[in-house]
Structures are given as C-alpha cells and as structure tokens.
Length: 100
Image (cartoon, rainbow, N blue to C red; front, side, top):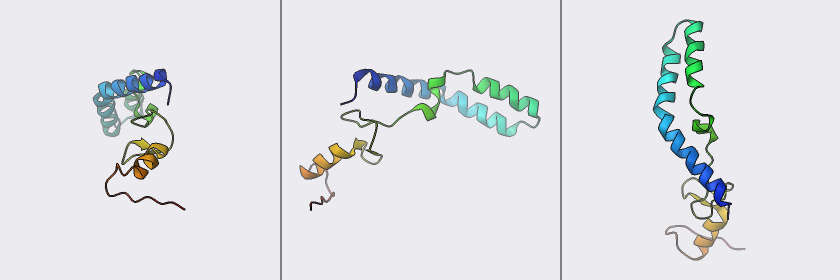
C-alpha cells in the first residue's frame, strides 16, 4: 500500500492538470500558428506561467486499489500483483490464469 500523502499529491496534480488543460492546449496552438521567433518566445513564456504540477507529464498512473506506482496495467487500472490475485479468485471475466 502506498503512503496516503503520495496518493493525495497525485490527486492534486490531476486536478491541476484538468484545470490548466485548456490554457496549455491553446498556447500550443498559438505556437504552431506564430510566424516570427519572437512571438514564439513570448508564447513560451505564457506556457511556463501555470504551475509545474499542472503539466501532464508530471502525472503518474497508480493502482486503483493499492496506490502502487509501478507494474500497472492501463486496461484494468490495477497493479500486476492485485490483477493476479483477481485472476485466481475468478473475479475478472474472460481472463485465463496460468500456473506452472
């Protein structure tokens, strides 16, 4: 189980990313339309004005149940260990388990 503070930090980053998403997208469109280099630099300055944690690259995918940051499967939103336990308990329909 991940520490609670790390999970809360990640939720805060997700909220910030959603809040500033439109601003970032519009700034990037302006950069592609700008013709002169000085205009592009000015728009880059605007793009750097939102908080750092609002950038989508700062987000980290975490397990839905445990909050673990590693070995996550995008399709399920779970870590590998939890996914394997659910396979063995037959909680995920259509999934086949392997044992050797």
